[in-house]
Length: 222
Picture 1 (cartoon, rainbow, N blue to C red):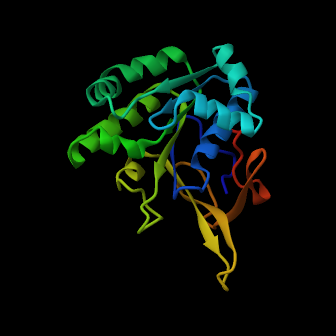
Picture 2 (cartoon, helix red, strand yellow; picture 1 turned 180 degrees about the horizontal axis):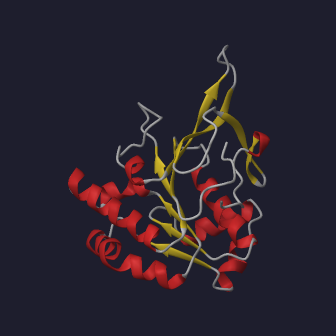
């Protein structure tokens, strides 16, 4: 699906309905980089740190070890602390990320920026500031967003696609008789690289996402 992996320095949006493995995708992306000796940042607007680490343990990813070695930082932005979180995104986050010198960043989930902002203009400004902070750090970034339940090929906020260099859609697929429901991944766009446009089946197993034909190489950045 991605010929050569995600291009280094890209901001890539991963979107899908609940249960499609978006957080698992983000953790896989970070864990692959850590295994190659890289540094990572997980910026969470949703799950608490303990819950993220427990999820990683279930898939066998040693994030606790990387965190203890200071190769992984988990930053928490609480959507309930509106003023403080907005100030951090719009003013301090860029310098904070640059100082950490991470090569991979995951933001989960940008959909919760709705709780921080009053109106579309404020959401757009905050989203662009967040993406700009990640891009300015030089890291390759995965932004996670909820899909619109009525139109699952676009994000719930309808804005995230426009700040991203690439969009990967995780979704449900159904057999013709309607008796089986599976999972499929599709690269909707990926700037400056060739990619397949077909949906590729995948599953979520004991070691994370397993995509047929190695459709997404989490370890490789082109």
